Length: 365
Image (cartoon, rainbow, N blue to C red; front, side, top):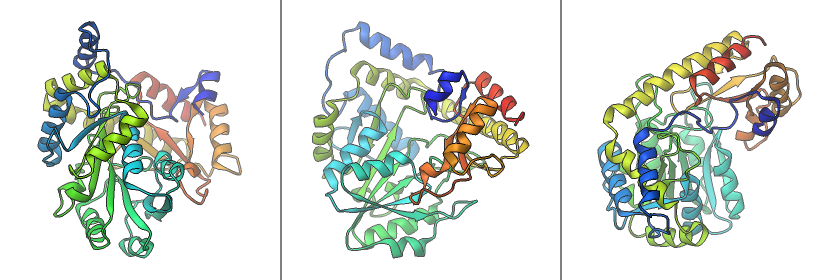
């Protein structure tokens, strides 16, 4: 969809590229590092200033106490963190539970490693967790549960009660929990982000995965990180080094500059700015006859595209692009069954002028 959107000069609300401006402090940190000669490989676990900054952020925001020398790994994006952790901790044939709708990279990462992803549906429109269904999905081959909060594509923010239920089952069945928390600062309507690693007994079995791509609008930089028990980090680091060597050196310095120097108000501003963008896009979708499921976090909206002609969601997305010049992603990409052919996903992580243009175009549908 991104390629086709570019071809016709449309507005890309399909891919979550987040093309908003990065903070000047972050850019300057990277440029200064380049000019200072920090252009070589780094340690496999990342530069010390960034690991120390991550440790401080985890303690202050997430409530996670992680040693920067033994329990933090800087990675080639959050996807690199998940891939390396999966290589280290999963074997072919292991089952990993994901919540549906799920992010396609999570599902396909498991398939690429010959692990078996198992979908547990969340109940729309609030995307509630069915704890009984989760329990029934656990088998002797289950090795891990993957939690994405706030979630791509539906904006689900897992509640404390839901996370406690997941933690209880993980402890009972001796499972790992992989968490993707890359949208942790994109929270709306007073919702609160909770890291499951902070719950009793969970740090030792949780791989907390995060990144700076979304927070600092640097998706192309590929700077992420994970926090985990020192029992697992050396092996995860070995596989990350084998596949990626390291995250880009000078860009690590830019990320560190942002984590160290940006005020706390920067993160609160993210939630306020993106809640306004959410409301703007959801209003346009409603006016276009595409009822949205209002997200509690992240920067995506799933909308009902029943009124758009087409047998499949992919065809509906093509029809919408042709009619309005607005690109969306087929909702079927986020469901194991290939169903949900009446859903489209829209991204509102865009510059104001692009979002304005998209909303005006949608209203012409």
